[in-house]
Image (cartoon, rainbow, N blue to C red; front, side, top):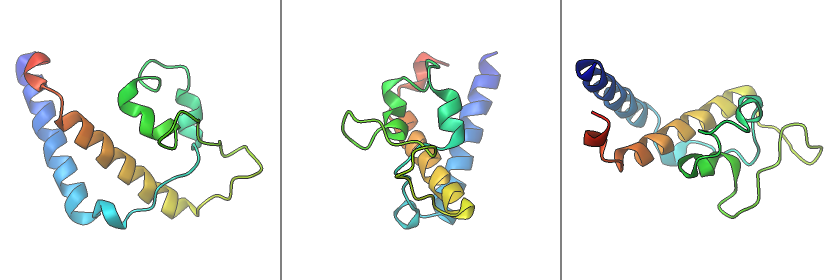
Length: 104
């Protein structure tokens, strides 16, 4: 089991490195609203975890509006996916700060 954990972390690091090279984080858009998949995840323990707070809130305690809210002006789908890549990169940076030896 340990070898699979090590392999997972190495694969994740390689993938994140590739994302940072191809998509510089400062060039990617930020979403000001929750996407459909975010709404589907509401109530799950991972979505409610502090590490994913950047997905559901705007830096303060207020939840981002949802795509169903009338005030939301959606980005085109390509920009939404680029923003999701930014979210994955932010998650990767947060994971990099965790002591993985505990999980390995």
